[in-house]
Length: 237
Ligand code: ZN
Image 1 (cartoon, rainbow, N blue to C red):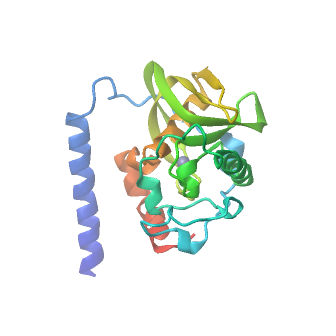
Image 2 (image 1 turned 135 degrees about the horizontal axis):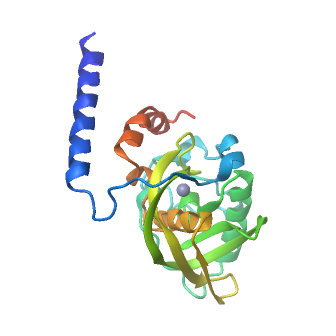
């Protein structure tokens, strides 16, 4: 009887403390929540994510060291250790990137995702794939991508993540981004976006630095997501 009560009281204290800290120490220009923009679109959000990771892929610092056939790679779920690691640049002569990108594109479409980063399949290399904004049945491969914020206006938007099924949280991002990187042939490619794709690029680029949406979510979303995160840690889907 006392334990649930204590847990509830602590939850309230935690909420008040983090709220006060957030209010007094918020960054300049980020104190106002702007209108929510959907991350994946209503149709995408309405469909449940396909859970693809095998149970034994969830835990362990060595999960990215295993020699896994590229076609056997699956989307790893939080709290797989690799998801919090910083990925390394892709070398120019890395012949494994082509088959890896092909597998990632297949997994992204299979899971109805808008993007997928290499660490999510257990590979710590700076590479991600996204849907092609001009044709959502096509894909774009970004190798060693670099982002430049071209419009620093911050906007909140609902994001999900294929490595965090069951969570949809509000994340604050810059609305205008320029991206440059390499394609699979080694050609320099670049693009600019001030809409949905700018958010996707920032989300996927975060994965290359070991950062997840749960590292950026609001205090309220953190509280709201406690059960879903706990279930992921315990291995429930
Ligand atoms: Zn993600």
